[in-house]
Length: 251
Image (cartoon, rainbow, N blue to C red; front, side, top):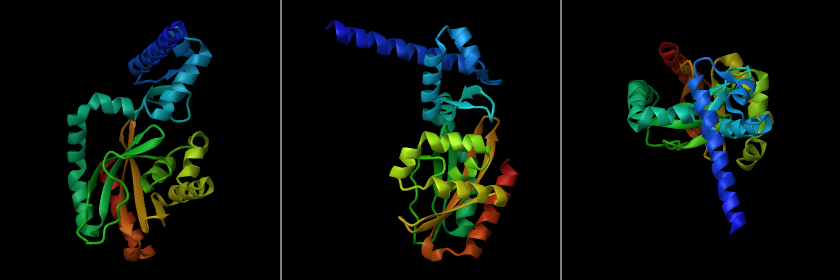
């Protein structure tokens, strides 16, 4: 009985520390806050604070600012703050863009938002062609690098950040049959081209994606999924041009 009570207390204390750190990161969201400052302000020892921050980082509740060592709120925290009504408004804001791209391409078009080391599908519009490339449903979360938008978002990071993301989830990438070497190559190609292009042989489709900063603290991306039998280098290039034009307008 004593051991069970002790475990509950320990779990409660850990939860309290997580919330304390998250509250402090939130209060310094505009400028970011370093681990050393969090330790000083919270009184939590450095190793514990680092471990809890790493957990929140992986889950998307906090994120690092560029290559710095400062933390700010991640998309998961921001999604809570936006509320479901806010997310619906955000989807509606981009709906004309998705409808326009779906009408021109006849393919499925997606709005994706970064959430820590993942991207979340916020909205999807189907094109008119009867053959569909069913890639991801609204609300589904996928690792950065496991989709066209995810590759495009990785391409916006420096090499050290990309390495850290891939290293943190090496086992998960392996389970989903995504090669780290292939992801690195796709990131380099996306940096050079300004957009990403991926192939998924499991669902027989190709994808094109382009990322953009939706706000100072939030990255989003547009992507188009194309059934393989309707795909060609020329057509994918055309779709990429359409995406880049749309992104240039919204960003």
